[in-house]
Amino acid sequence: MPIESVKEFAEVLIAVVGVPGGLLTAWKAVNEMRRGRHENARQTGEKVKENRLKQAIVARDALSQIFNSPKSKAALQMVDWSGRIYSDGKHEFAITFDELRPALRIDNLSFDIKEQYIRECFDDLFSNLELLQHYVAIELIHLDDVMVPLSYYSERIASNPRTFDEFLDNYGYTRAKRLLAHAAEMRLA
Image (cartoon, rainbow, N blue to C red):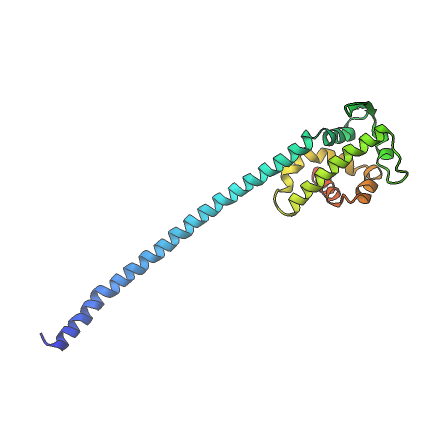
């Protein structure tokens, strides 16, 4: 067979076998890319769920820290139950809601033992709420995760600004105040 015939035969062979082979290879590549996208989407969805679960766990742990802290828990109870008996380990106090505002004053900073206890309890609570709002701000947790247990207490605090606002503002509890306002709004919505 002359060289030109071999060249022609090769060109025909490439056209007959090569083009369909190339198309088949391209088709396989496109299908692999589609499968890869679907797999990536599935994995991304799983990662989103996993991350969301982690956020909820962090929120649960942060709330546990508040509700397991004797002082934070006492502060929450003080806004809910007037006249309840509290103990600092050495003294017992019956604390009414009317005693909170004088104890949380920002002037005349000489306090009796009961007022000191009240201030320590709210300082602990508001410090914990500061941290909680920080977690919300950096998207470590979702606001909804902490609202269920806090919204009732937040509404009680927010509805008494004369009792709490000066203390929150004067001692720099801006994040706690923001969290309390959000929680109260969500409860009223």
